[in-house]
Length: 475
Image (cartoon, rainbow, N blue to C red; front, side, top):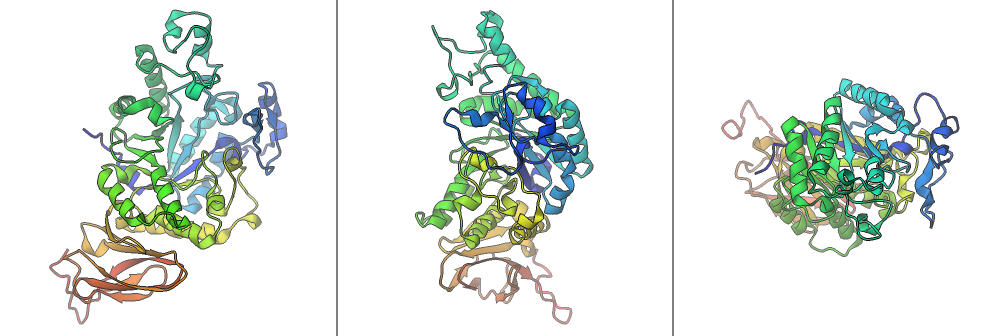
């Protein structure tokens, strides 16, 4: 049995924010906030100085000062871009900048403004009809976690929440700073549900579940059931770096499989790009609610992965035209680059003179098309050609159906495609929404003229001649 997917998910474009690196609110600087960090063993860095990996892992204690107040102050920027949901990496009490080593789930970190700042952000987003998704890290906690410290003191009530060996305990990937919870324990289940419900009651719209593979299918299902018990309109997404099929006990997963498929096709090592897209669609029941990812706080930046501007745009184009929910990692839309963690966690650029405005406008165009074309939100996926890629997003209303194509090669390509849609009548005109070129279907076949390095979306234009509409009885 699948749980109901929230109705708003299909119309959503998500913006991922790493809070410490987005914006400092209330007109402050990190220097003016430094006591918040230094008293807990951290140090501050100036905005714009690139983060660097430290062999001793000390880079996780370097702070730039971003907070929830700052995010609330930048809602106008997000609205102008066109996104309508935010996903935040963890915001709960922790001594690291990433907050994946939670001390206390029931406290929003004062470094981010505490519970008052979270309430302000929720209210500000909802006033703009925007959603908020929080990051739930329930596989493990931090070594300073309030319950783990009690467990170390030998209190059985809390020791049972963790796995202790003779002189050690189990940590995530053996990391002692991240003791794992025993998810089968009733006390742990109650602990997790209490956290989920506390923030749902505050008004958040969904949860992203960290380390979905470590939670396992049944705990993913358990969390989803409890969230849906609260409200079927709350969203549950799980972090899984695997093939998408079969993970339908949650609303959707972070679709890194799509990212790897796109990148390998661009790199020339994947000759089955379209076939893999088709298989993933056919085998993933909840594909429309999965996240279409190209980069995140856990990967190198898209501008680093794909340096060529056209090929990067092609990847973004595929992200927005393939079934699923597009997720934009903060700053990718203005061209921020960066290698693996922590280099991918640079501070947001707010000097507009340093933005790649062409890229940002491209994102705005795709977001606009997604919002205004039902096929890009709800349409099915039907592969028409593997390479160069051509596919159809079919809709119940035939005139809303779209044909998507892309040519990543240096030479022009003329290709004739069979369109398996009996309702598309011979002589029907298609307009390319990127080039305004015109095409006509003939006997169910469509010839597309692809320029080198090009992509496009073909939309039906129903030409009514002398009050004659050939679609008068076709819908």
